Image (cartoon, rainbow, N blue to C red; front, side, top):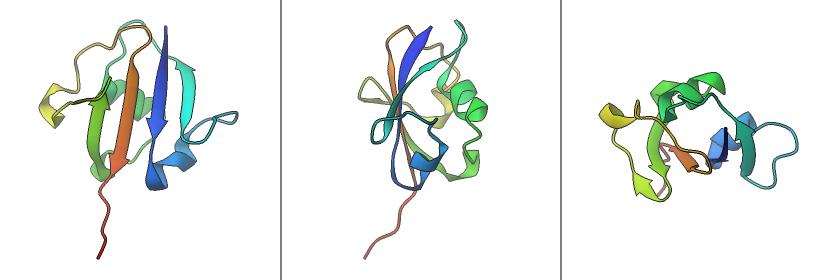
Length: 82
């Protein structure tokens, strides 16, 4: 199935070639979850801070739930500012 993967800040370097800005449409397994997608794209899980599916925050303990075709998975690392 296909989902939209949106990676922000330093995570954008993990997007596949052909991504537009910080967004790529990617093929994932039918039973893919946010965690399995992030692991498949080799994101450093210790740096994953904010995960949203279709604009809804997904806490760390719930990131194993299955995604649906067409879902948008957006991910941000922890950022520091001042």
